[in-house]
Length: 151
Image (cartoon, rainbow, N blue to C red; front, side):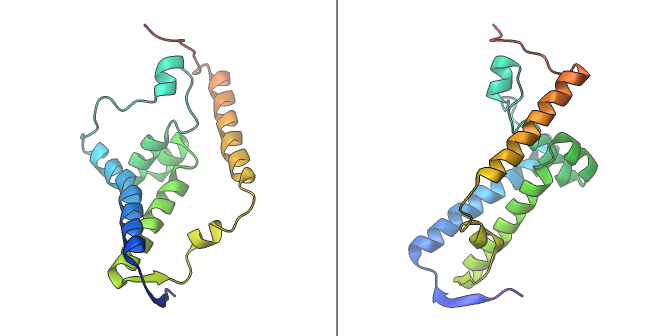
């Protein structure tokens, strides 16, 4: 069950909650708007544009858009971490909105426990390991191509 502390959020804490709420809701709102044809034409991956090599985050936008449409299978095919990150953004929005609405800090959230993790290297290994597997798959299927510095 959700429980709140007795302490009232300070002005700085409220301001930071508004910032987190805005940052976390932007990709969620963007994924809905992009599905309705409101995607700006200039949103491209700079690394892929310059080198032809997909970056570790390539596919996240398409994954988020698929989740917003309710197509989980396509979302997972675009980027395995898409649904995980989408869910994390949804949780942040819910938690920040609840804290702002009540004016009090939540006692327990999963994000407070993440602050205590001393070794984040395993997340990087997991994420970049997945990136390596994606690159290997693209090489094997022939979809990986390198176009250095298009002119």
